[in-house]
Length: 115
Image (tube, rainbow, N blue to C red; front, side, top):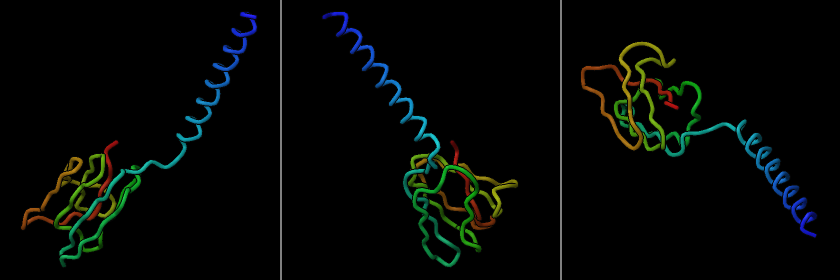
């Protein structure tokens, strides 16, 4: 009987490993998000919240831009002065921090995540 028990145990371990591998492979294709909100204030003092943005790509802000940004997500973001996440004048904003632009600088117009 011990030989049969060992075979069953090995078969169970192999089946469990195969299922775990399939589960992990299936989840890896899902779109990942930055859990939490990015909240910003526009030049006209409107408060806008973007909940759990994707970790991929560029995220444009309101057309007039933002004068204050609060990163309530679990990952860091980079703020840009352009709508397409390019160019100089970027600001690195770590998770759970806020930043207010200097009065004589341009507003932020987009952000991307650091992952």
